[in-house]
Length: 499
View 1: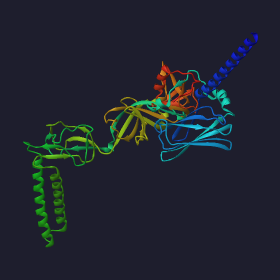
View 2 (view 1 turned 120 degrees about the vertical axis):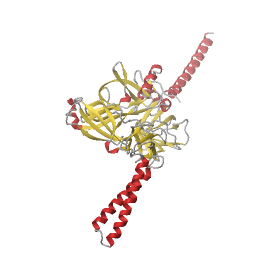
View 3 (view 1 turned 180 degrees about the horizontal axis):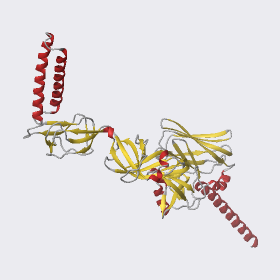
């Protein structure tokens, strides 16, 4: 009886041991699937983010390769992607012609050598062969070592925020490194916008009469082509300087001067009048002919037709429909080319800094554009104080822009020369109760919220004085979306990413 009991207990123990061993193998398999090591690489055009199962010699590991364009941070679709894993002199290579989903390609690599190596990703994009190399890739001696030790390679950051590539591809998103750049005093000022004097054209009536908007309403900003009909000035009931009277006078002067010239020409041949007298008569005739020809181009039986003298935009209208105008009165003005004057008024305490202006950002709609982006230049920096407001004028000239209206105002950030500073775009910052934060990239799908101290701003960029290094990549577009993701999507930094 006792012997049978011992045999039964031995069998139960062995069965239990087998069950435990089987469970342990399942756990290893589960760990291998859940632990994913992130690898990231860049060139000028492409970001490569790889979620990889731990790499072990002679074991098969799955790599999910995410391809992102650095032009717009959208997924890249290409006909062929090649991944090479090189350790020492040994390497494995796999080609994938089809994506698992847009921008994501799956590879199953079986390393043949252990040690430290690199991954090389190749693809065709932007019309050329792209190669992105990722260094410090470790291949373990076997799969079991990879499973147990690979967790040390997974980034461990408390409170890390998950924002997957699939999410970032669907929104306006971007990341970039901070840069060291000369960043001096930034002077914010309000500036007036006016037509550049060399590009303004004022059109006046040649005759007296009543204005008729014969070609529809003429308003500021309307585009006109050279020779396009704008107004009609009708001189009905006007005795002097109306179109009909002027045309009759011009015709009479032309006929009279021609008759005198023809007569003097014959007399000069007979030496009855001198050549000087004949030339004077000829000049009078040519002048009368020119004036008459100019008049008949714009004066008809209806009245004087006022046309656009150049191609451009209406800058100002001085008359109303039906209004009486005298000959010589301005009726409208145009902007011929595409140039505007931006006049900012600056406190005299910045006189010294203004001697070293490096650039200016001008508010155009909802963005700030540099002088270069507006094809602009600095026209002058005032050397004397305006008596009306005791400020120094700083004047820029830029190309016409449909969101910079003549007669209006805009904000200008004048940048002066200074010291090297670490700067990031203003869009990279979020603010909470006057405290500023950025979202630092741990991996392209994992971000750390970090407080920073800020310096001067030019409306487009902000100097960072503490809390950030130039080798750290930050979210520059979509920071608010990452902030919102933190509320509902705080994750365990040990967790892998599953597609």
